[in-house]
Length: 380
Image (tube, rainbow, N blue to C red):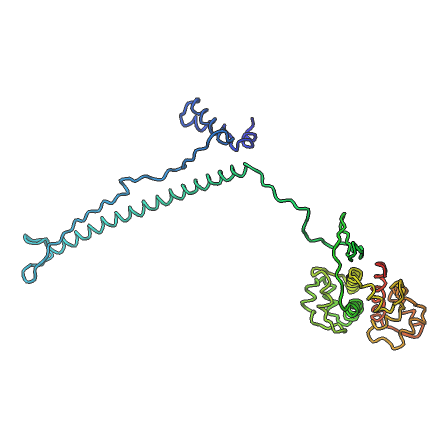
């Protein structure tokens, strides 16, 4: 069996171990017995016995104190004792006493040094012993973990964030309104949310595209940063407090877009705003009826895309007072008629009828038309 097979099976390769044991002078019989026991232990077929790889040191004579005080002072008597440096017949003198004290201090220092050396050795041995204990506890934990398989509780419900699902529409299910969304191979059904005071909200949403057309045309710095690839969050941080002309700010308008989105130019930005607004209108219960009220369609079953184009005049900043009548005179009878034209063709058509719009105004009119006409596909 190859070494890799042994390691995969029992976790070790016995051949190098056998050679090492034989090199220690142990005979082949005892060496084979030791290796067999090792294999059995690793396979879980024999009880495993724990031993420290390096046993803790036992008390030794080198770690016992040896200090014995040698100095003993004979008291002097005031007025009687003769004190001198050298030793005399009656007294050992100062020099002997101080040398004896120094000798005792040296011996005490040697004992203290031995004490710290023994403590250091004991600490090192204790660290190795605790490492052995930790390794054995980990092996026991591995053994216990292998006794059974953890089964996670199963649930039919799955949680997660769905990225950019496609809206399918609003349907009635069991007497309640629901929204339906397509994502990959799945269709999600979610509770619908009824709206309160939708008329004003819808008006504001429909007009977001046109007001951003006007703002991007008037703020060159914004248009430049947009073309440089600034994300929505970066644009909001820099221009978010700037007003866009209808009471809202740039930050409020751009907040409906993904924060990390970037756009090549103002046209792609406005187109994204229009797409988001159309989804908002189509996905809200009652929004189609509200859109009809806002745009002037009141007859039952009338498609939103067929609404009179004249109602879009209010979306144009600084629009001529006769714009609504000129639109009708130009043969642009419905919103879908305007949405089908480019801004240049729209300017040309209205110019022939007596109204000259700037490129920005024509773009505002076209964007407003596309927003409303795009809702028609949801049953408007």
